[in-house]
Image (cartoon, rainbow, N blue to C red; front, side, top):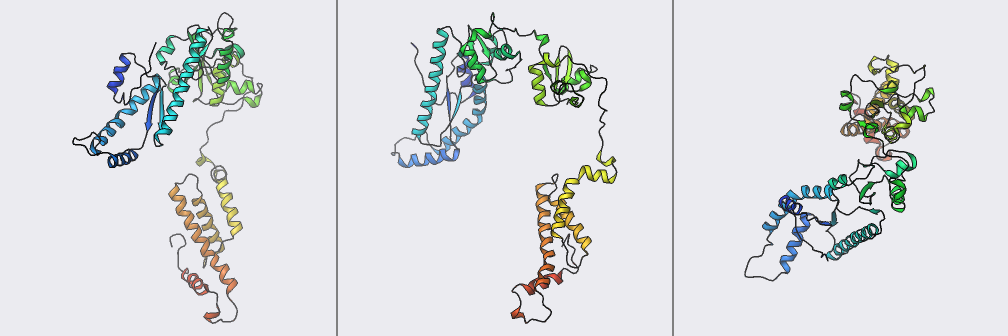
Length: 421
């Protein structure tokens, strides 16, 4: 009979962690109570107010707690990463709540853990497949006990002849054990299918064996792709997935992007997008053996904007921003005091382009938005004064409250530069 042991505050150093590992002591679950340092010292202060005075010093002084807290934060990141990577058994609990709330959360987690273990034991005892998530299985142990399909999903391979590589994640959420071997599935749905009828997906009943290593596709990094030089990409660099999925029409000849390259049967293929690359890696046998038509799209040479004639440069580089600015100017019809209509409109368009420049910094956009608002406010002086000013002289007491102030502001703009003033 085994017994449950609760270890409090251990391990908190890498040396303690290594001692546990050396003796094959693997905690089924580790709880980290996440509490801000400010809250720790607040609770300490309340505790010290309530405790009885003692003739001997206690180890809860502010200095000692501060030292322990600093040591804890120095080491905990490395310890947390180790257990998350090796055993996936690290649980973070929000310790800011009451101790009863924390207690209930921990009890719920432990009950869930016990349920996983119980179900695993019962299913393995009955010769069934069982989920191995939450069992603290290390990556090395997983590799050592992988079944005939490595880390490829046996359900995808059997049902649609797809090579779904599950090695991209360390998670064992969709992993199962059957007849002493481990298998990784690509989804919850496939895991449930495997748990229901594992015999259908492993030899001798599995319809498709995993291809030999030489016939497995491999994603290429940019450096790996360059190292293959002078070997050329198949299909002259056109995306094999886009071409076949587009029913091999002329319009489906789209150049691939070198960031999405793969190697299959000692050949290089360049895909258009990440999604297309993943599709190729799952079903390379479906896409690899294609031939290009005799007529190909003309090569697209990169064109620098500055090499275009002025109308072309404006169309390609600033058309959208200009249209918005001119549309705003057309609606506002700005006229700055003592400036021509032409110069007023040009200044407004310039402010608008600066204020809404998508490539400008946040500071620059805010600065020119304020300048534009100030410019518009000054332009509105003419509209206001033309509406309020009468042919006959009016005594000051009969004028609009802010009429004199705005008239004075209008005349003060006679020699003002609207850009800097």
